Amino acid sequence: MSLPKRIVLVGPMGAGKSTIGRMLARELGFRFLDSDRIIEERCGANIPWIFDVEGEDGFRQRETAMLAELSEYPQTVLATGGGAVMKEENHAHLKRDAIVVYLKTSIEQQVERTRRDRNRPLLQNDDPEAVLRNLFAIRDPIYSRLADIVMFTDRKSPRLVVRQLVNRINPRTPRQKRQIRKEGRNHA
Image (tube, rainbow, N blue to C red; front, top):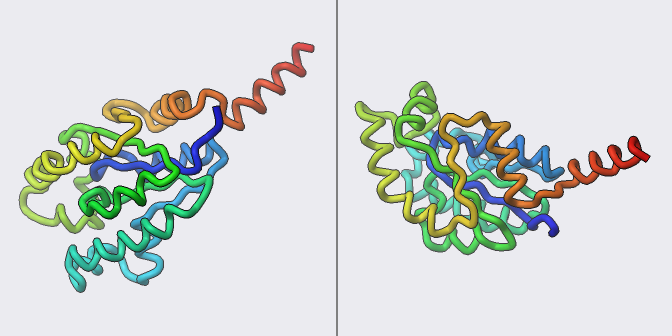
């Protein structure tokens, strides 16, 4: 079985898309891309600023253009923003030549992982937990429908999640093949 052209990580804020994505890319010998970080780099501004100046609609337009571009990149693990699934036209970009992985996590875990993060404009209010619950109710069915693999991340180390993903995506990664060849030479 060969590796897919791309692996796309979707899921809510705090699911571990960036952390797990970096580790997974390294394990597979792919490059790692984070659509939100690339948008920030190209705009020269952070996402809260883009939300303030252009509104969520302006940001979502930038996100769609970015996903269209990044869907052309081979050998890539792509971490998307939590709301990337909200525009129907993004679904084709996310699925193109890719395995879509939904990193699913509980509301409680999201609250814990995002409580100090000031770079999440949708959570800058008096009740971020209520926002997360509302977003989950809307987005979870979409994530689930798009996903080829659903991976729960609660109470799991990123290393364990990556190991489980590698085994589901392709039990023989380049690194494992090298290790198998090395072990074979050692036993010969």
